[in-house]
Image (cartoon, rainbow, N blue to C red):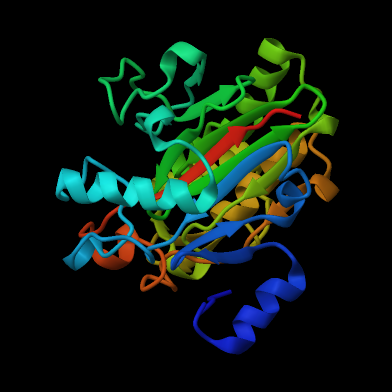
Length: 292
């Protein structure tokens, strides 16, 4: 279903369904998720929008990436503004280095600042996880799916970047398994959010991608995940595919928020690679543990 964020009726629908919360502080607009908001005294989480930054032209205005060709000083100011709105120290951020694989990095205090104030040795990493308090993690998006994880029992946070490649390789399930092996997290205790990405109506894929999806989810997975439109083209629902993966990994459906907010439908509010033909900045997901 396509969603136009700027339509008042759609905004009412989003809040009514309680899957997505749109916040504003100091003219910085950002997104949170109700199931994770229940733990706001234990951890911080947020997903950025395009609004509230200082970047210009097609980076306008809250571009949080240093790799898109934007002015570095403007990106640093965007990070300062976003961090002030959310409530963390941007100089302690730990950046991912996403390449559509399913490799994770266990973040320690020694990683603080890697990617923003010092060179990072965290490479080819699509997921970050930590139990360290006060170290914010950041991952980047412009149509792919942001996955947020919090285990309140073990006090562990994680994020994973799930494009179609990460989705067919079940990155969400692999993160759940990683949290279990490294921290003892139990799937039934983990709270998740599946954040804004390109919707099924906007996401046409080729037959080779469709075949990989069917290989993972079965030929009878249903139109809610993928359906053919003719000429060897298919419409893929990354949100529903990621949801199926998390459920298969043992996460309770009652513990998962799934937004229906599309980056491509709302490209004035969210960066979309497909809508802009690659001429865009990057959105970001951030999480940080707090003392409790």
